[in-house]
Image (cartoon, rainbow, N blue to C red; front, top):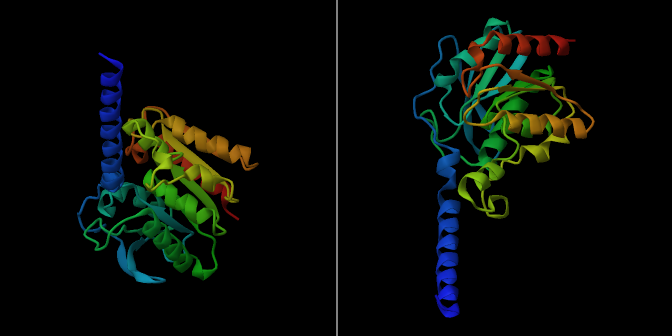
Length: 264
């Protein structure tokens, strides 16, 4: 092929790559938020509407003893709280007051999810739950770990449990899509950037066999806390996969041991 032909082929490939990048920027929220639409209905939990400044109220599910230590749970991107009953039961059965935030656009809730919207909701729910003066424990799973970190970086909290977290969503997108995602107008979910501002004790939990978010992601976050002078406890659950950790005795023991150490 002549030099002119090679240049023309390169130009076509470049144009196709740019078009591919534009499409991925447009559709990436569908990959971030593939929310299920089952309504949030968990036995023993009541639905409460929480006011959000400048936005419609967001619903939460609340259960456990009213005088129990408050825990704010953020689910993963399945987006329907009914799928996370084992996580909620973990705290309720331990005598803690657990509140779980719904996500707009999931679980039958109206609205459109985005990083900005979900993080604003998370701060509003924390401020409502922490209004009683008791520091809140944050527990975030997968996508919800990003919400827990966002709140912990901006509010004084009792402790933070990060389960199957990722270091940066845009870096994961970059590897999966072969694009410089962190330089594109995408929702970044840069958890590493939040770590330095977190003052509370942190437990990072990861399943050793996590097939969705590899344990190296959790380890990178733990190392970021260490670099900021606030070492996190990193617990690897043998055989644990993405989404089945609550059924592992080692997981439950690690959570209870960590939270017991934070009790006043």
